[in-house]
Image 1 (cartoon, rainbow, N blue to C red):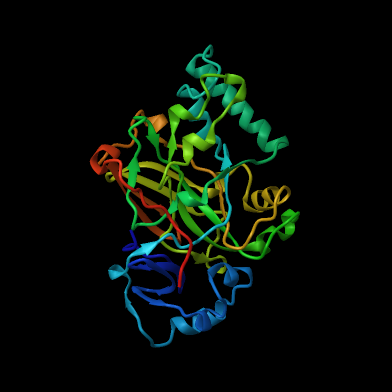
Image 2 (tube, rainbow, N blue to C red):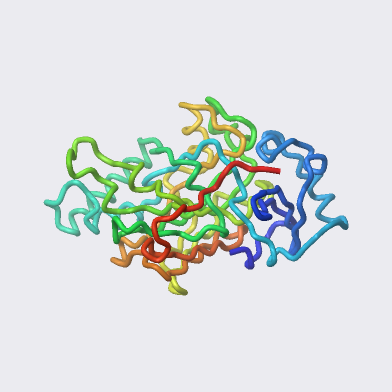
Length: 333
């Protein structure tokens, strides 16, 4: 997962050493643990509330107890208290899903559904606002946890996304001030069980994001947290390959609602806390479009420009039995 490089001079990670997880600094192909004194904070989220990137830049250029990053076991680079997810934020993505039949209206032809979705997205961009829902922080995992595909469905899907990592607490912030509250960025793959998205027992209820998106390990994250000063999040390439075949390939320049709009919009209801994740939406090219869903043995590689590459290995639940499925626990030092 962490063999492909990011473009920044340094980044943060979290390294698992047996049952202990430590904040670590990554520079080029090296990684080293950070003590609280070196970090200048008691833990990662405290640091992100007021990040001193110059302190880490000096450490990145210094000697110390470095080890090859390829030899490290990395878990998710963040320990969020809240996970907010953005729905329907790439125009073509929604058009594809509606045209593929992921809609409560089954009377439209594919062409009619595509035209309906295109008009809906254009209206939203002009007059609407972002659509948010919440995920479970326990689903956030790193490359030390395989993606176990639950046996209750055969339509588990991928959704590669740029994820904003919140820095200073954001509450009722304006679009103009929103990016002052962003500490950095990471990669997320928002795994979705498509046949659980809409309720069938009572269609009036609508979507069921809890069951569709919150099985153990359903939010592979990382491997790196790249500081915001090193990333132009408004125009980065997002690319996912399944077993070496390109499935998603787009730019965040195509977001309906840009990053300032998302951070500001999400902050209007509840304070966004240091270390929280705000997913920005996924582009076209999901399994629902390709009529190809995840199977045991699949390998997904998700790359976002400037953030490196994430590798997710899929395992069928039947292959691991009904034993304990590891999730991302609290950070320990």
